Length: 123
Image (tube, rainbow, N blue to C red; front, side, top):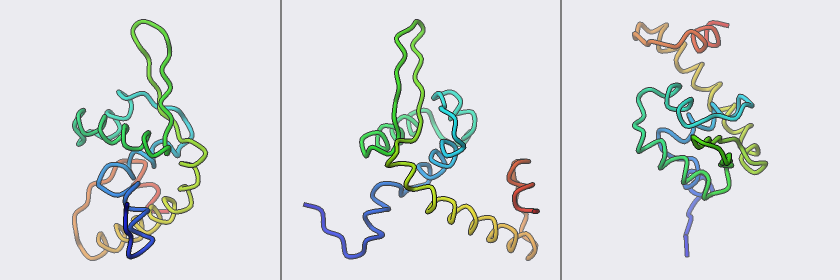
């Protein structure tokens, strides 16, 4: 039996950690992604950690793993309907992160951003 003192603990059980939110942000862009595409988009994650995080999200019914019966095997990941219910929460986290990064840059901290994130934060 799990015990929660705060409801946020239940959320963090599912999406907590460094990589799950990043994976979900990518999948929220609306396109199915292959493991290799996710790895390319998250260069600092190890293959082992990526697979582990994907399995946990699949187990929690947040993402769908679709296997195509072909050679070589093709596997794609997408959000489930239940996973899509996290969109509002993750959007708010992304917005807060953009404000936080902008503030830190204005305070003189050096932060490197992808071109896409740079454009998002500057606007």
